Length: 397
Image (tube, rainbow, N blue to C red; front, side):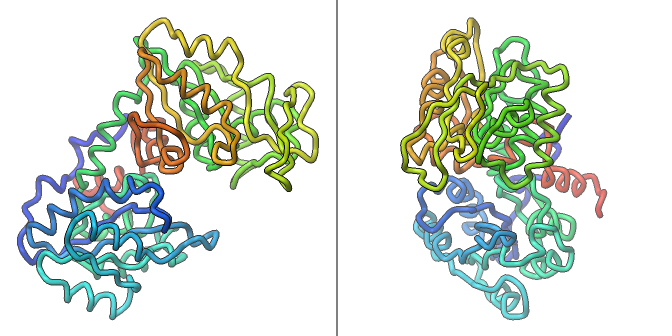
């Protein structure tokens, strides 16, 4: 199962000559406050190698989403790249059209430029072929980084791979390799997945697949809310994310089938009035239901689960994909208890996703990919990896 990095066309295997025109597909989805820059910093070594060899590099990246109007200019990313690379990185607002192409062609050997946010285009997130062809005019070959969007078939990654010679950057390969210890069924390890946050993939991929390969799944956030609703509990005004009905179908199917994993459902949750999130939290028994005006923001892990985590009885591994509670709003009971246990001497614990790593107090192993890392753990592949594999084998769309 999956996309073995050894089967991908690799940037590290390609000679780079002065004057070569490259497009670098990055995943620098970082807010202007630069609170966490891992998704930028992971691209530095590949960009430095290209520039040092004299390549002319047009960088394409994104921040936010066109769908919800959160896409913003990327000048802060260009500034950060310039500081870290210690070389100029121009910022070009346009990324399509004659002016953008002229600016890409005007790059000098060894020069880098970050072009505008790809998600200003509606066609980026639906992999519009016309938009991909526009992006392809910026260079002759593609280096694919951006592991954080490796599960997304977008115009600036999969679309480009299907048009130009394309190669996996070291940043992409390193992320895949780092995830290997957490993939597959391991009879020799006690395996735990903590699933939280608000994104649908935590349910659609994480809950659906990791319950079949891991020993214990601890849901939080929208995953927990959806499971409680599927189990027939009242959840009041609790958040259900961007694809509530799809996630509810998955949760209902998971609860109805035989799973390898035990699914932890708490006896008590913490709820607040969402209109006054700074108000006094209320401890609610799940069996009693969450009152209509309250929303779940945290939960109390059951004592038997904490005991198992504190002493798993053998070597153990865990992934934390998504913040299990509203941690930055001061609701950190579940997250603090779980992370304290998962720091134990027998645990190998990985935090996945930019928001998860930024939100939680953690200095151990982490992955810049949230949804992409989760999909890779669940399925062994992703849209970008499949496109690169097609490219190497000569199967093109």
